[in-house]
Length: 423
Ligand SMILES: *Cc1c(COP(=O)(O)O)cnc(C)c1O
Image (cartoon, rainbow, N blue to C red; front, side, top):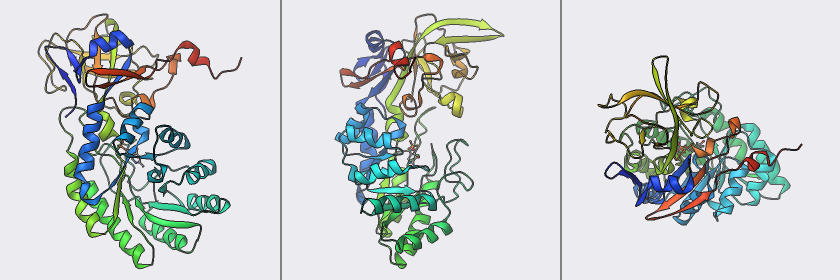
């Protein structure tokens, strides 16, 4: 469930008219619903409550401080993948002793920064990284808490660019290597083996990959313990799918049903790193039509959001529901069907690339210059992946809470575009 809905062909975010937000803040604009954010976080907290998990919201999905603050206030912890993200969660008031640090290429400076902040554990991806953590920890007279990231060789059946748990991609290590490295950790006083970590890819709309992964995790934990390691944590990463097309997402309880019993039986603590599941359906991108044109037998709607704002269609062939903010045709159940009164339309942006589109051949009602367009399910990997390509200032972000709303990132100016450059 999310809190974006049409009332008399007028789109609302919670109790606020989206057209009024666009008038006040301009376009393109990212609009987030606080209730939807909390709804999704609460769903995970409740579904897994039996094993008292640490929920580490994955900062890379959406790293705005306003969003991080909402998460922190609601009891979420954080999964960070860089020193910059660690800095952000500190700004948002996080307790860094519950933060996990992931990523395949942590620098010594980042490792030091994380140790200074007493993070819960590093998700370690290679022997070289283990050595680096040990030597930085030694120089600081401390101990590096590590979880080994397993590549369980499970096909999560996602896009090639977002699958991470299959043999042959850059993430994690196979089980044999993890066992070798566990021996190494045991004999090294500079390190302590806290647990094991996996992240299978994203988005995953079935429970089977998690069911298989948690069983592998429990087996490895049992073997580590038999050798004398105090291995307490199973971290199953993120990747829970969301509603991009219709209502295809599973509830958090479906994932919990396959994960919780095995974690309990293993006597482990559970960490999770959900990003998309929490923030994906909590955000929309609202843009305005600049021109329409017919060319080469096609209808193009050219609007003011582009691939520099939302790169997912260009990068992952991602599907986002798109519909006018004040449509003349009610929004359909199935956005992939041919819809009466609609015409196949390419929704494109102003960037000078043929890959700059939000949708292709999409059945959409007639639109004209000045109309507002909503791209749904854009809260995750939207603004976080945006750029200034074509010297386009980044859009602003607005957080809605009931009938109130506030800016959580102002729109960039032309001055901002050149602020770091030196003549
Ligand atoms: C990206 C990532 C996540 C979050 O994935 P979502 O699909 O947004 O839930 C979690 N853990 C790791 C290690 C990641 O790289």
